[in-house]
Length: 182
Image 1 (cartoon, rainbow, N blue to C red):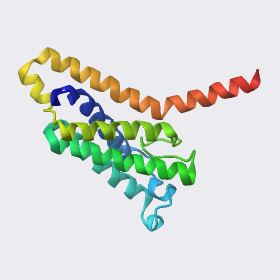
Image 2: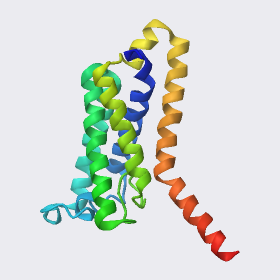
Image 3: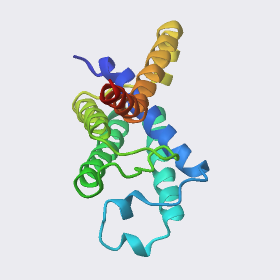
Image 4: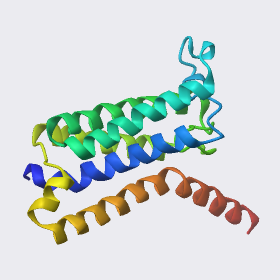
């Protein structure tokens, strides 16, 4: 595997991280902090909306920097960001399973799917630190059609990560309710 092999995966992680950050910044529902839900000591003293928006700014900044800068620094931003998010989802599942994660600026119950997606992207970030990729922007200067396909694929993968954390748990819950009614 070369560093170029993970550009799309790192880009997908960066897009998901940036989208989650942006949604926290603009959301009217960003009132409760995931830190409070996870019962992080001292978190209740912080303003929920301010903390959620600050987390959004950090996520948007890290995701954008990973896309624009690439290399080891961009990969490290992805690895650290998703490792922190994985730790938060693990903690939330331990102390408040099913509570709102506030990760996309709308009510979304935290599930093990959050942990799986976050850990998966953290591992991708670590792999990219070891074998650093370039940037999608650099790919456009070398071969635009390939880069366009790479961006499309990264967008689809980021959206699938989002769906794994939001829609799949809802679908599984609905399917289990249908089974009970049979």
